[in-house]
Image (tube, rainbow, N blue to C red; front, side, top):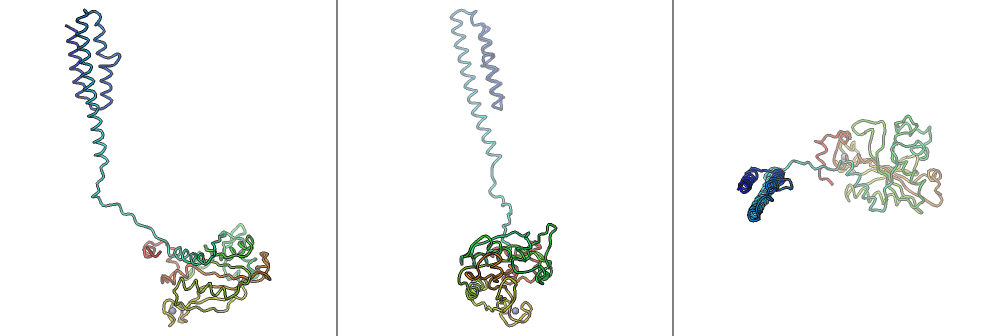
Length: 344
Ligand SMILES: [Zn+2]
């Protein structure tokens, strides 16, 4: 019985191939080559027609049982390989939770930015909103409309950076006052924090520093309102016991003008190097908006009054955190910056 032998040989051959198979691809190749439409089993059964009906029945049954057997082994082997694949995957992606974590250093706010935010929040809590203006500014807004004419000594005093395009780097945040008043009708209550530029560089001056400007315009605004607002502000920053004094001063865009001092935060008023033995520290400039400024922006000075103030953020930050050299704030030295972690 040649066919019987052929079928048995085929079965053994298939079993051996399946035994050696290690991938799903190989299993598929084996299935096609033994059981496929042009496979080895079909090939053997081609000569079935030459047999007697009895023999045909016998061989047919044998062929079917061999086919079932091979298919069963194929299924089992497929399951086994899939299981191994999954196990390998899990093994490779295993996380070792005993390993120490990678060190990630947390960042922190720069003392200037912390101070700027703190100051802004105080004024925002009193109803002021934040206004902005460009750092590359027109002389018109930086000087002329702030009542600083071309021949005014303030233009030399401020040591301006002039640009080739006829514009300047703003020397103060005051032009934001002008831009705001040109765009908005009173009542106006804004603060304008931002960078300003002057040709200065020594332990207490940097060519770039931050100012915050304040402007309030409405009916019946008086110097008393200015004093009240600044008192609340200074007490919020330096504590309820801070001593405050107003000294008459001069600014082209305010009249009357004043400079505000606080009792020295280092020596408490007894006199030290920081306050140059005066017991006082100059902290900000302020005054009532000059009538000429109102006229230039088209606000009727008969109907409205207002006050403005400006201060240096670095100055406040240096006093608050006892920093003696302004340049430390801008060198980017991490040993310095790390000391301010968690201050806000
Ligand atoms: Zn002092």
